[in-house]
Image 1 (cartoon, rainbow, N blue to C red):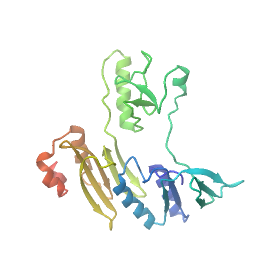
Image 2: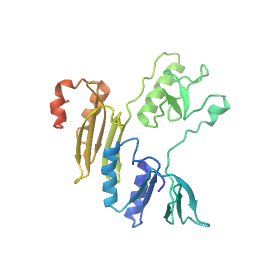
Image 3: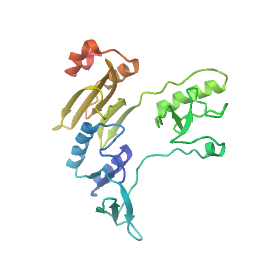
Image 4: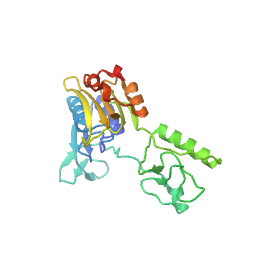
Length: 252
């Protein structure tokens, strides 16, 4: 499996359950780089390794070997992973051909302003194809709100889009995972964490200037809705830090 994102891991786990030996090649140094920080990814990796999966992280594919059918994958460091089936799940790319014919700039997506207007006055765009404040969302709640803003402005209104809190509730290899906001993978901010490696549970709340700015819940997503609401409302939690430190989410 080339790609250690959500879809790649789900496909890998489905094949594993059918009795196949699975190797996962991921360019980033950890699994699920958009939903997991290094500690959380380590717990996920340990759980999948206990299921029999192998991982090659921080690795880049050089070529797929074989003649009439695949026989393996050669990595850029010279390592060869033998296998009779190669699946690529390495992200998505915006289909922005129409924008190109209009002469619009296309980066990762089509750049738009807060009114969902492109660089050409009177031409609007919304959804997975757009790039807003250097961000490509690729999630339904963002596309829905962007479409409402674009439609309103096309009809003569004047509203703006301020961004969407990135949030996902998923099942990864059958395990519950919820992630929202800034997961602070680089560890720049304060965080409350709970890690239970024996039971493959990892929880994290990111605190930025007395406000919850993001979270990761893996293996136990109890309290996720309360945390997400606090993120969206920018609730000041300075007075309940002791309770949050004991993972008392009812304090929210």
